[in-house]
Amino acid sequence: MGAQPLAALHVTTLTCAEILLGIALMPEGKRRRQLAEQAEGLFAEDFAGRISWSARQPSRHATENGLEATADVIRKAGPHNLAE
Image (tube, rainbow, N blue to C red; front, side, top):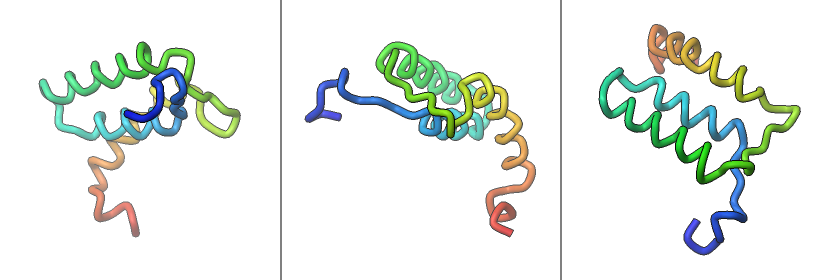
């Protein structure tokens, strides 16, 4: 990001979902809460108005509602079982 002005950068809903899912998979605790707050701040403030919500990607509402459920499935299955 260093060479580009922040205003020129955009992020997609898929990228947001991947970041939030990674955070949701973390064990509950202070670190997870801090990262969740930082990610939300990044999306709401630094990328305000520059998040691409295309028809091919889930809406933010659907993404947020599905993250915890997806994280639960991954936690229960374990990463080694997801490839099978």
